Length: 413
Image 1 (cartoon, rainbow, N blue to C red):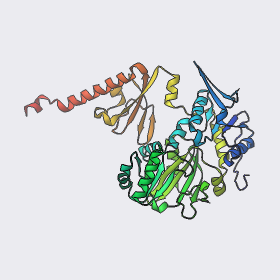
Image 2: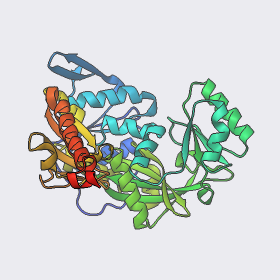
Image 3: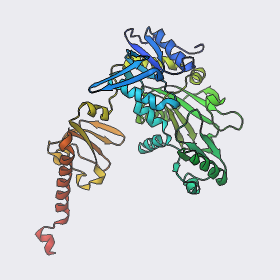
Image 4: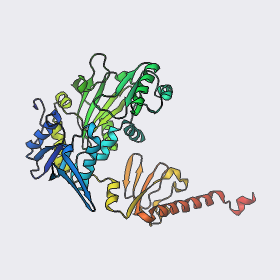
């Protein structure tokens, strides 16, 4: 089944790891390849249908049952289909509370599958994307067309996969008719810029553990503008430019995905992120690149199981008396240029500052705050917000006194 897939180097082995592939399709290529590579590494591996899993909760206790039996695997690779996203992500949250490692979190999967939410996160992190506008009324279509750069435009629903729910429209009348039908069907609709120079082709990049492991170019057949492999598109190997690799890694990272298929358009000004897939198909990419992508995913699980990411909200649920407050410096001009010590006087713990797309962990007390900084403070939940507010007001009052209260000489002029 894996003819043509290069297996470079010895696979990572951890015979004591019990691994489950969460999939409803045991015969699908991607599922079979993951199981094959897990067995190659002598892992105890099983395919588990998420719909056979039941979730139990009680005070101080959570449990997952598989066909009535306790879930006993220590790590999972989720291949959650779109039709069961709700149940699948709820199951992952349940497993997370049991300490089961997952290659992708529930939050990451949900963020990537909502195209509007994903676009918001990518744009906030200055990752290039096509201009996009959410449309809630057919009367907004003409304004949306103008906002994204004019006709033709791509019309898509916010939740879809493998090219489904994505349409190209060349006239305002066609776009309005389509949007009206989608809104009538209670679908959330996006109108997106059409990148003409990338018509009928895109680049698929597989990111595993913040590393690019494989890439390919996909081309549509005939008059079809969608290049998805499942829509009979062709695939070919690609020597991926560093700029494309960097954008793909950043997109996966900001959406919270450790395993991702990032689709990039080849724009005149460089790569643009079209979509990020949390359960990328492996057949096309392995065929085109010759890379053992399934092996890379399993190796990531072997290497990282036991060192999972903890979401802040999940951590706080385990520490119910602790809280986190974020402080945007730009909203409080009196903080700009002041040191952390000057602002908080050592009374509030600052555990991180987000600055220029980077995190400064445990910043030193003499670190001075900048206009675009986002400060993360921790402390007792009951008093943290009021303590931060008091510190901000103290700095604002001091700043106003220095700026507005003239000395005797100035007053006399």
